[in-house]
Amino acid sequence: MPETRLPDPKRWTALIFIAIAQLMVVLDATVVNIALPSAQADLGISDGNRQWVVTAYTLAFGGLLLFGGRVADLWGRRNAFIVGLLGFAAASALGGAAVNTAMLLGARALQGVFGALLAPAALSLISVMFTDAKERAKAFGIYGAIAGAGAAVGLILGGVLTEYLNWRWALFVNIFFAVVAVLGAIAFIREPAEGRNRNRLDIPGVILASTGLVALVYGFSRAESDGWKAGVTIGLFVASVVLLAAFVVVEGKVKAPLLPLRVVTERNRGGVYLSLGLAIIGMFGLFLFLTYYLQTVMGYSALKSGFAFLPMVGGMIVGSTQIGTRLMLRVRPRFLMAPGFLVAAVGMFILAQIKVDSSYAEVLLPGLILMGLGMGTAFMPAMSLSAHGVRPEDAGVASAMVNTSQQVGGSIGTALLNTLAASATTTWIHSHVKSPADLKNQLFVNQAAVHGYSVAIYWATAILVVSAILAFTLVNAEVQNTSERVGDGDSVEDMPIPVIAH
Image 1 (cartoon, helix red, strand yellow):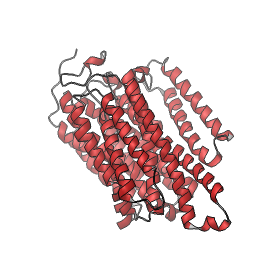
Image 2 (spheres, one colour):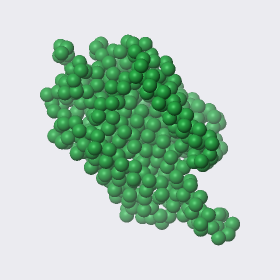
Image 3 (cartoon, helix red, strand yellow):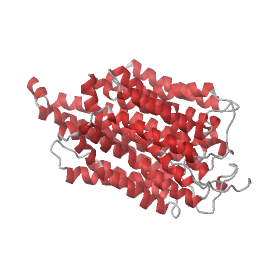
């Protein structure tokens, strides 16, 4: 066992700036949702392309996270953290200044590239700066509240900026967050020297993983426009399977793999990556549907739409800091994760009951509260296990893997559920239309759209139930206790709690 290292005296101050960076990344995943209707009108973005304002970001993010985590291990997490912040700010400025659809989508993809470098660096910095398990639990409680609630807070911030300034400030605001975080990183973050992985980059692994994930998400996106049976859709799915299978083969043979298979084959880590990724599929799709439901059907302003999500924010904060954090040192992780996902599924089921004239207090309010409580409670133990028993030199890539599962889940969720909603809406119209005049009737159009949203949310409910079953079945870790210490990575029992992602 290595010598015990004294904790960094500036670790709690450093956490503030790491959390600011994480808040920026998480906010950006949803702040654009509220601003999207305004941006779509301003730049003339088609209905078919509007989802790419969200998906271009999450796709680049998810596709390159493993690469970003490996680069952070190689360059140093502090260096990768600062470079990621500066690049993210520059890409945000470019997006805010966009003059056409292509410029905006390109900037969003560039944000995802730098986010893929920034996020795993931030997470692994926490795992190496907080060496005491009890302190780490508190740090992750703070970080987890930001990570869990940040996406919903982004909807509120997006509403404020869009209402009182314009949609471009939903991107420009990232510059402020990035500058503050960079200054704080320079002044307060000190990365321990141990655990650096200086092996050469696995370029074949980078190419296979990135193209495989991109093909997977793009396949779901093309299913909406071309149909599930179209040659291009099937071709993309086949290509994804071939590329990802080749990635697994390559990773088992190369000397310094991008993703050491030991990172994902440990039962608890694998269970977390799978169950959390599935849960995020439902959550991200819900944000998109409810945003358009509130603004186009209920007639809410951008600001009012943002505030409508506040109960979910509150539920996430309570679930993460008051339930998850307090119980994860006393209760086995699966007894928090599985019930948390089930509570979220109940909330999602309630939200699936939306109608054109639904009452916010009777349907949306209880659904959002339960969604927040359930996801917040499940996130804490899930994320704390994402680097369960991992070797120090694999900390960056393990952090990247939990991010990857969530970002790819978010990309698939947006594309898949959007496809299901569009298909359900089309079917409803064909079975209910009586004359061409119906298609010009706003009530008829809203009823068709809401039916599509409802069907997609039912699917999201089922996915959350599957997440609960997987978490209960696969995750078998014992209660994380305060006597755990940082080890050499050879023993699961010697390793601490890490790592939280958004």
